[in-house]
Each structure stands twice: as C-alpha cells, then as structure tokens.
Length: 285
Image 1 (tube, rainbow, N blue to C red):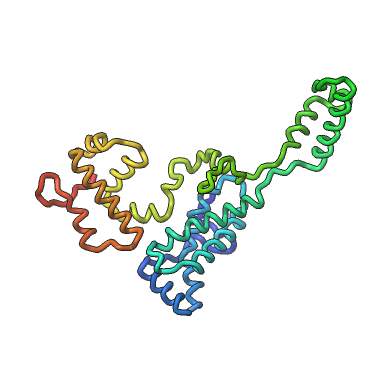
Image 2 (image 1 turned 90 degrees about the vertical axis):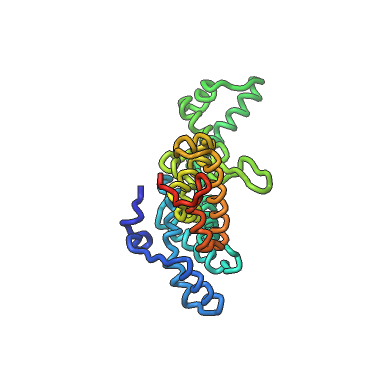
C-alpha cells in the first residue's frame, strides 16, 4: 500500500504539502474571481491533499499511481476553475466528487480486459468448427469432439471460449435508474479500505472533526454502526432523551457547517447541553 506521506508522486513531495484554512481559501477564491489568475497555482498546491485522499481508494487495484495523481489533479483544476463562493459549500465538498469523477472516467476508458490475438484467432476457429459439426451431425458437438477436430486439448477450447466473451469495463453499468447507475466496480469488495470506505470522505471528516468526542461517538454509533438511541444511551450512561437532543444538535451543526453558517454562539451552546435542566459542559466519553 502506498504511504502518501513519505513518497513522491509525479515529482510532487507528498510529505510536505501545504494546507490553508477555509477562511484563507475563501480569500484566494475571491481574488481569483476578481481576476487575479496568479492565485490559481497556490489554490492547486494547497489542495493536492484532496487528490491524495481520493487516490487512497485505488491503491490496491494495480493502477499506476503517478498516472492517477495527474488525472486527479485535472479534476482538482476543473473544480478550482468552476467553484464559486456563492455555492455556499466548502471547497472540499465541491471538489472531491469532481476529482473522483475524473479518476473514474479515466479508469472507465482505459481499464478494459483484452483477450490476446492468438486466443481470439483460436476462438474464431472453434466457432467455425462448431458450426460445421452441427450442420454435419445435426446436434451440438461435445467438448471432446471439438478438441479432436481441432487437434488441441479440451482445456485450450475452454480457455479460448472464455477469452472470446465480450470484454467488460469495470465501469460497465449493471443497473441504471437514470439518476444513479450501479457499475461493476461498485460490486467489487475492497477489503483493504472497507472499514473506512467513504467515512473517509473529506467533507464529512471535516464536519465530524468539529464535533466533541461525545457527539462524534453518538453519530458514528447511530448512523454507521446501526445502534439504537437506547443502546447508545446505555453505553454513554445518559438518558435516551439526552441522546436524542445531542444527536439532533450535532446533525443540525453538520448541516450548517456544510453551508458555512456556524456561529461561535451556536458552537458554544451545542457543547453545553443539559442532563436535567441545569447547564453544564459535557463530559467526554
């Protein structure tokens, strides 16, 4: 598995990539919208970690990571060029799907399983022999009959036949309801990244990181582990009603965080939920 923190990809030292706050980033985007095109390069450099975070989901698929990094950077640049502050979302929330989409399009166009030319020729000969035997004997020839007629082993017949099947892309749709298609790659299990899958989504991680340990535990237990409010209440040691209040406040905070509308007052009051009517600061789990 690639350790992106200690390697160079496409000549970029991933160990020391710069990052900036959302407030600083908004100022850069404001300058970019005002025509200061020179800040585009700075925005690219400060968001390369978004590309690396997306690529973590493709590290065990035999792909050239230098190529994927360059493709991901194309997605990042498209996101920077199309992002507008009036979108009312953090840039990472906007950029990650565009980076991922660019990588998936690249894989869709390039990751086809191709049969070798010799197997293709053999498969065509098998089909011709099969047709001749069917016409002659008025029945489907057996595997042994085909092998004997062609002078090859039954195993070679099977190999050529399997290879002659229509090649499929990993991104071939297997279901499409016109809004959210399901592709072959969606059905493949990724054991390495299964536990973190898209809990690793950048925007969600940012929002969860702003919560208190107790709030974070409650949301993960409720929505990622499928626990009931009563089960979480027993684990934390408070009432089900309190779990409900904390959960609602945390979800409300996350929704507002995505829209960049959280005020210091809301941040403070959320951390001061009560257990029995008296105001007190939450104890961490």
